[in-house]
Amino acid sequence: MNFIPEFTPAALAGRQLAGLKWTVSHAYEHNNFYRAGLEKAKVRPEQIKSLDDIRRLPFTTAKDLTSEYPFPFLCVPLEKVVRVHASSGTTGKRKVMTYTQKDVHDWARMFARCYQMAGLTAWDRVQIAVGYGVWTAGVGFQLGCEEFGAMAVPVGPGAIDMQCQFLEDFQSTVLGCTASMGLLLSEEIKRRGLSNRLALKKIIYGSERSSEAMRRKISEQLGGAELFDIPGLTELYGPGTGIECQAHSGMHYWGDYYILEIINPHTLEPAKPGETGEMVVTSLCKEASPLLRYRTRDLTRLLPEPCACGNLFPRHDRILGRSDDGIKYRAVNIYPGQVDEVLSQETEVSSEYQIHLERRDDGREYMTVKVERRESSSSTENKALEARISKAIKSKMLVSAEVELVDFASLPRSERKTQRIFDSRFE
Image (cartoon, rainbow, N blue to C red; front, side):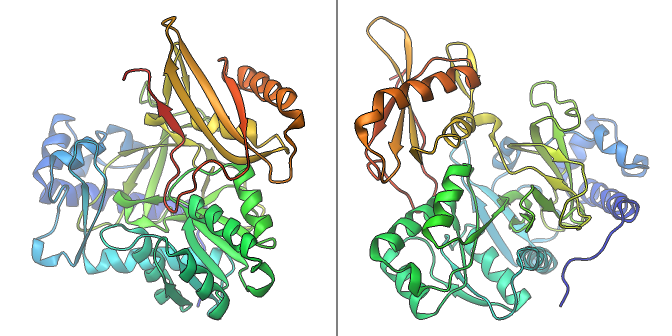
């Protein structure tokens, strides 16, 4: 079955405008928070005449979600809600999203598109190594499998012995995981000498930023497996709202289900074409908890050029980080993704690193970047390599950093998201 419809840009714009009109009307009529926000902005549903009118709508944020806990943005009667999912909240309350039966089906269809985009068939066996429960990850991968027709192997996170056993015994062909779990499992498979006994061909991963060095390492340790990055925002259904295609030049996103804007996070104005900014999403057919100009904090950029894969769905770049992940260091905003880019250019280091920030006795701030050597790398060239990386960080990020090379596999691995930043300046 073909899950990916063919849209011309004009037809997609028409679908988006119809969805935008419906969503604004639905939110205005059925949710007090949205109605108050739209009235404050002096916008009524009948005033939405074009896609440009989206800029008249007020932004919504994670703070709005947590302040409206436990059922934020709810626009249907509770008896229509068939499921809730949640992610962490910055105020101690979780960001809870509700789903109607149609919302669940729409999500399943989107994820089925992802599997088709990655080249899966009904013969594939998808081993799901992400969290279940209130999290959207595991359920999202499984929904997509069931809609698409592939076999789901729902292992969940962790359980490395079981993961390895099932990969071998069930001959799973696809692994769904976080980037950190992909690295952890690939290293364990290599350590156990299992690579030649597996049928693993593709890795579909998300939930966190990954460097090119990490992607290369995971692929190499799994015998050349092909990696596909996906966005995974709980507020917007969950994972599966887009995916990296087989041309590996950005992520196609399902623009018939939501509108994606890129804004300057400081001025809140649209980013210039090709400029990195904050992703803002507006749902087009979400019934239970629609989103109006929701600020995701994810940093990326639109890719307006036609994709080599031939698919006409719009694209954005891989997620480059989060606007709230920035670190103010010596009056300069820096992001972990910038360290990723520097290290990805070095062949003698691993993908794993940590950023340590401290204030020493002289009252000044210092940054130390701990980096693992490549597995087969010798420590004899440490000083020269540390100096080279330090110089590259200075050039790329405009800050000074001490670089400390450490042994391969000495930094902790995680089955979820790997902690990169350790800040003791204010302790």
